[in-house]
Each structure stands twice: as C-alpha cells, then as structure tokens.
Image (cartoon, rainbow, N blue to C red; front, side, top):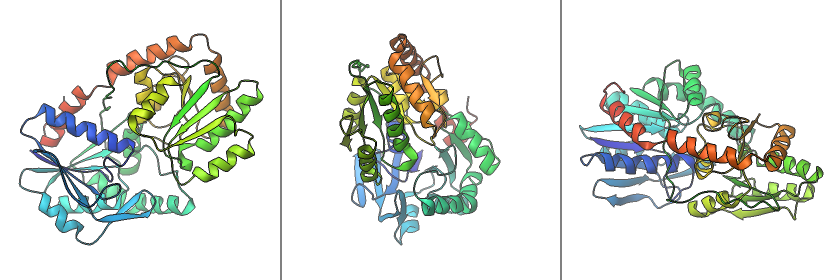
Length: 374
C-alpha cells in the first residue's frame, strides 16, 4: 500500500495535527514493512520540494502560503503535483474538513477513483480569528466541507465529540479512533507548590482562550492566591495579550516564553502546579492529552473531546468555555485541593492505558484497505 497523506501542515511546523500525523506515520511504518508513505503538505514552515525521511517515507511540500492566517492556499500546479504522487496502489488521506486543498483532493480522488479516508479533528465551526476569518470558515463549511466528508470512503473522528459534529454537518457516521500518546520514558510531573504556577501551551490566538485565562488569573489574585502563569507559544494575539497583562496588573505574575520546542513544552508542563487549557473549541486536545499522560493537574474547558480525557471533579476540573468566573473558581479549587496529586496520578494511569497507538494503527490499516474495522 502507498498512503498519500495530506495534512495542511507538517513538522517542523508546530501544531496538534502535525504531531498526530507524524506519530501516526511512524507507527504505521513500524507496523507494516511494505507500506510507503508520501506526505503531501504545504511549504509553510519548510521549503517547497521533496524531503526523504527514509526509504519508505517522504515529504512533498507544495508551493503556496497562508493568505489568511492558518489557511494555506497552493500555487498553480497543485493538481499536477498531486497526480504525480498517486499510483494504482495509492490510498489518499485528508485531515480537517475546511482546508481548500482538501476539497480539491476530494474531487480529484472521486474522479480518479482513488480510495480516500478523511480524519476529522474538529468538533465545532471555527471560532478563532476575527469576524472575517470566521465568516470565511462558515462559508467553507457551507460550500465545501460537506463534500469533503460525504465523498470520503471512510471518515475517522479523533473524538466522540468530533464524530457527533461530522454527523451534524454531513449526515454520516464517523469511526471514532482515539490517538495514542508518545512520551519519553520516566517523564512525570514534578510540580512546584509555592508559589503555585499554571502552564499554558498553544498558539496565541483568541480561540485558545488565553485572554479568559488572564482575567481568571486576576480574579484568583484578588482572592489572595499568588498564582503565576507561564505561557508557551506565540501568535497574532501576543501583543494584545501583553497589553492585557499590564491592564490587569499582572506584569509580575505572567511570563511569555514564546514559541518553544516540544521537549521544552513538556518540561514546562511537568514542572507546573497546574496545566490549563482555556480553549473555546477542540477536537481531541493534544496538549491536554500530554499533560494528562505526564500526570499534571489539569484544569480545562469542557470542549470537544476534553471530557474523554479528564473526568470533571474526579481526575481534574472542566469548566464551560469563555466562563472566566468558572475558570477562576476551578483554578482555586485545583490549587487548594489536598487530593490534587492523587487525582493527577489517577489521570496519568488512565490516560496511558486508554490512549494507545496500537489499536488505532490496526484499525487505520483496516479502513485504508477497505476492510471492516474490528
């Protein structure tokens, strides 16, 4: 089998889908010595051209760019380049419904009679970005996302919430396959306790809810708890957030670490008193999954598949998105809870047991081959 996979971005570009696809590819290649994988992705974050990762694994980056932030558009020649990658043994895979190249790939696969499996990582309409970006995303969902989902031979959802969204948007069932999680041996949380430190990892865009976290932190401070924030990530909202920190009087309590590599992000998670994910929307949040597997105390918004990782009040705390009062209350509860470490340990054990690549890879192979998954 030759898998041509089409994530919009791929490492070294950072993101949850990038990490997901890279880990999936490596695991699949280990499981099947006859499999070949061509990653067909944008040249955002790396030069256009071909990169050989191994004799069975290569990356073909098509020329293009982000006309709207985080929405890559290819230059002319995209279809010809895609056709050159495909042969009689090819199966095509796309990720996340709203990227324009995936709509074109859906039509290409349909006309060329190439089997295509789509993996949906989203669980709601796009909520980040400005009003124009959200309007464009809404129109894409209305006009092209439904064919991307409906024309696929199989649809995989990364969480139960994503599967429900596929049903609402396209009227079809999706196979829910939870991803695995890869961490270095021996990496476990060793949290600081005084003063309490909360860690956030992600892009600094409004959809990640960092502004809400700052407001909640100011409320925690007013309650007499000297919570400090360490923010790992960068993005278009960075300067606005820095200004908000000054307005809220948090200059001595918030540190912007900027874009960091994966290992640094994991170390920051492991050393913090709490890991916080205040996002407005998620599929299955990679950072929450990693924090859970490390054994962090997790406070997160109850969006997407987060509740499939964290059980509210049992292994962590979940709050409604955009509810800063509820987020502040959960932060206080987590900091002052005498059972915090026991909850985190239970979360770590359950996460490592449930989220494994072995089963997911086996079922992916069945879906790619057109066999009934177990």
